[in-house]
Each structure stands twice: as C-alpha cells, then as structure tokens.
Amino acid sequence: MTRPSTQPSKYKETPTLKAVLIKIIALGLLDAVVVYALFVLFLKESWVAFVLVAIGLVAINWIYLTRRALPAKYLAPGIVFLIIFQLFAVGYSAYIAFTNFGDGHNSTREDAIDSIVAKSLQRVENSPTYDLTVLDQLGTYSFLVTEPDGTVSLGNVESPLEPVDNAQLSGSGKAIGLDGYTALDFAGILANQQAISALAVPLTDNPSDGALRTPDGSKAFLYESTLKYDEAAGSFTDETSGTVFIDRGNGQFETAEGETIQPGWKIDVGFANFARAFGEEEIRRPLIGVVIWTFAFAILSVATTFALGLFLAVVFNDARMKGRRFYRVIAILPYAFPAFLSALVWAGLMNRDFGFINQVLLGGADVPWLTDPVLAKVSILIVNLWLGFPYMFLVSTGALQAIPDEIVEAAKVDGAKPWALFRHIKLPLLMVSLAPLLISSFAFNFNNFNLIYMLTGGGPRDIGADVNVGATDILITLVYKVAFGSVAGRDYGLASAFAIIIFIVVATVSVIGFRQTKALEDLN
Image (cartoon, rainbow, N blue to C red; front, side, top):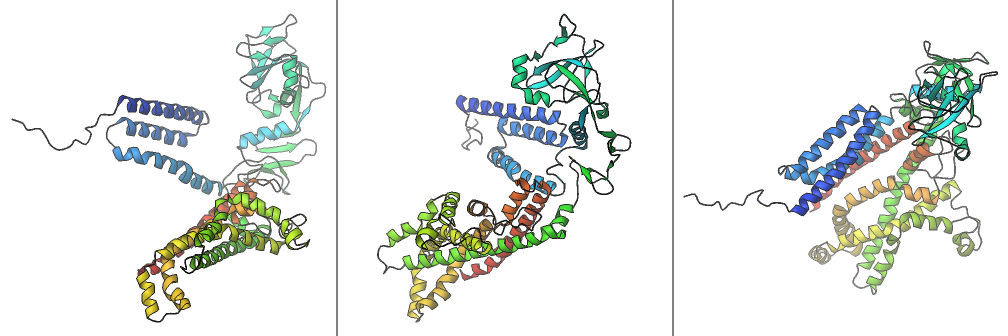
C-alpha cells in the first residue's frame, strides 16, 4: 500500500482564474506595446535593437507563462528597468561622447545632402508651369502634378515624382484626385499654407535635377539648387562663385580655407571631444574653473551642513536643555520644503534691487548677492547650508542616541572633560555610521543641479569663455548648458564627454572614501 506523501509540493497551489486573467491581460498589453516597437525598429532598420527587444519579449513571456523560474518572476521587472534607465542611459552617453552629435550634426550624410540642396533652391527662370493638386494622407502632404504634356505624377518630400495612371481628371485634363488620398480644397490650403509652401518635391532621385515648389497650392514651378552635388567626387560646387566644398571626413562639406556649409552629419570622432575639453584654451580655462568650484562647493557644503547639524544635535541632545522637542521641530522645517522652491524664494530674498535682505535687513543697501562672481558663490553656500543642515541634524541625532551610555559614563569616571569626551569618544563613534552618509552627501552636492540652476542659473556669465558658462556653474549645470543651451547651440558630444568625466571623478572619490571608512569599523 502506498502511503500519501507528507512533503509539501513546491507547485501545489493552483492560481485562481482571476489571477490568470490578470496575468494574461498584462502580458497581452505588454506584448502589444513591444510588437509595435519591433515594427518601428524594423522600419528604421535598427537591427541590433530589434534583436535585443525580440529576445527580451520572448524571455518575458517564457518567464511568466511557465510555472517554473519563480525567482525570475520577481527579478525580471527590476532587471528590465535597470537596463532601460541605467545601463542604456550610461552606455548611450558613452557612445555619444565619441561622436560629433549636436546642432548641425544630428543626422546622416544623405539627409545632410538633401537638406543642403533644399536650402539652396532657387526658381528657374522660364521654367514650365505644372498644374497641381495638394493631397493629404494621414498628415503627409503630396503633390499630384499634371505636367505640360499631360503626364500625371505623384511625389512628396521623401519620394520623388512617380507617374500614376489612376488619377481622377477634370474636364481640362488636370489631375484632381487619387484613390487613398484626400485632395485639399481652397480652405484646406489656406489653413496649411505655411507647411505647403515649404514643401520641395524632388523630380528624381538625383537632388541636382531640382524640385517642384508651389506658391499658391494650384501651380508648381521648377526650382534648382545653386549648390550642385557631384556624387562621384562627393562634393558641392557653388555655381555662383565656383567654390568647391569637399567631404574631408569631419562630418561636413568644407573648403580648403575652412569654409563650411550646413548642416553636417554625425560621425565617430574618437577622443576628439575629450581633446577639446582639455586642449582648447577657450574650453579648458572655464572647465578648470568649474571643476575647482565644483569640488569647493561640494566639500564646503558637506562641511558646513555637517558642522551645524552636528552642533545642533549635540545641543538638543543635552538633557539639561528645556523645550528640546520644540527646537527639533523648528530645526527640521527647511527639510519640509522642496529644494527648488526654496531656491526660488531665496533668489527673491537676495534680489539686488527689491530683495528683503537688502531693502529691510540691510536698510536699502546695494549688495549684488547673485550678480557678483564671489558673492554669488557665498550666497549659494548660505542657501545650501539652510537647505542641508536639517538632514545632518537628523542623522547626527540618531547616531548620538545610539552611543551606549555606559561608554560615556566610563569616560566621565576616568575624568574626561566635555570637549575631550566629544572629540575622543563620541565623534569617532559617530563617524562609524555617518561617514558613508557624508560620502553620499558629497556625491549629491557634486551634482546639485536644482540649487545652482534655480538660484543663479550658473551666472554671472563668463563672457570670455567659448562655451556658455558662468561663475557659479558646477559640472552638471555646465553639461546641461552645453547639451541644451540656446546661447552657443547644442553639442551633445561635448556634453557627454563632460558627463563621463563627472562619472569618473565621482566614482573615484566614492571608492577612495568608502575604503577610508573601513578603518573606522575597527572602532566597533
């Protein structure tokens, strides 16, 4: 006789119908989104991304449709988000750092050639007049052209004119419609006049053959580029001046004298961005200043906030002090306000002409708190002290209360004075638990974008620098200005190189700091 097993089965529990339905619906929604992404990647011919996404889709479905791989069911979401928001961001930034990606270099060479030709189009005198009907298909405008010999062709910005034989014709022989498209009437043309007048539909695959443009939506005329592209030589020739622009391998067409035509295209430049950061005087000089100020800002911020927070924690931890709870609540109030909002409030308080500090506290003084290079740095440290000391106060209070009373009492019995007791007993024990927090605080302040951007915007501006940089800019705000600034244009390659430098500096400081804190563990 077989005895029933008393061992619990690993997969004994059967999921409920409701749980199965929720899982199927969630997987179905995820699959729909990912399949759509696969179509987009296929159309863009991004084969590496296509394969990786397809493998991920199959793996996710296998994990959640099988009754095995239980640990993977919990790990998979975290791994997916880690790949998307951490590994991909870091890897893509590293890739961009080795390219010239930025304004004027954000597409392919073929797109740059088309753009140059389109920008230099001029109407050909005495060119034939083409009867035109503007068609709309899902927001894309096309030209339905009736040529002087009666041939009907269709084309748009992406596709050159191609003959069609199923167009609808008017009594005069003009093509006025085509199956699958909507012909714009006069009101439709007026409503989209700007977009339609900007269209340039190429005659053939060769950009030098010219393109059709329309001034009114009913007639089109031939336009040809004043810059003729020679595909065999890979060069543009300006027909008005005879200047030749050659592809010299630096992502743009350039003359021997260095004159260029825009736009260019994205290419790999190796370590050129890093060489620019440290090799060009116009960039190296402000960059060195920014690096020095970044370290000074981070170190002074940690030192001042820790000193004030620890001082208040020691004072409020003394049992002889009355009303400690009230003072503790007051001390942590700045921690309750959003940092960016506090920075904006302080910017108003420190306004040179209308600020509360100058007008009320200093009796109408004219102190340029935020516009003088030195005072602006002092102002930032003051505001960051106000924002940061509550955090240090809280962690120091907790660490102080964790010190055993027996150790303190033993030191007092041995005759230790209050300062010696704090310096040789309490502070070393505090540093065991606070040192890692101070390192993380240093890393936070090293990239404290909100305070700098909201309080001074990095200013006042250094007008002698080749990049958009100010006296109070730290590395992260400099990266933002280089990448997205409107003054000197966007240079994603150089900004990514700066970001890599920041990553190396912060990682190095963190590793050294954590190694040093291991010595404090012996105190336990």
